[in-house]
Length: 118
Image 1 (cartoon, rainbow, N blue to C red):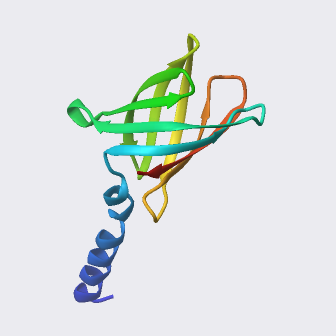
Image 2: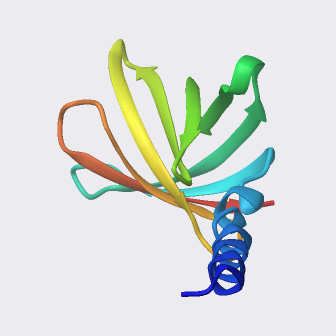
């Protein structure tokens, strides 16, 4: 393969790779989720860029406010949080429309969530 082709291929891959990162944005999102027992819920989610590459997260679901700390790695957003004195972890992928879709757990099964930008 010629050097020109290698450079063109590398530039093409670089143009594609950051697309998921560019769609993740600070702001408010509408939440639609399902608990591990299958019950649905709705609420709000807020994502803010924090210090040193961290992300600050806040859910408002019913009367509960849940605070989390996250990071972005390989195009995925991972967030740790505490709810009802139980530690939890969630991971989300960025959809083409800018929404986030993922899975979470506090050790009692898996829940799912979708965040749609507001």
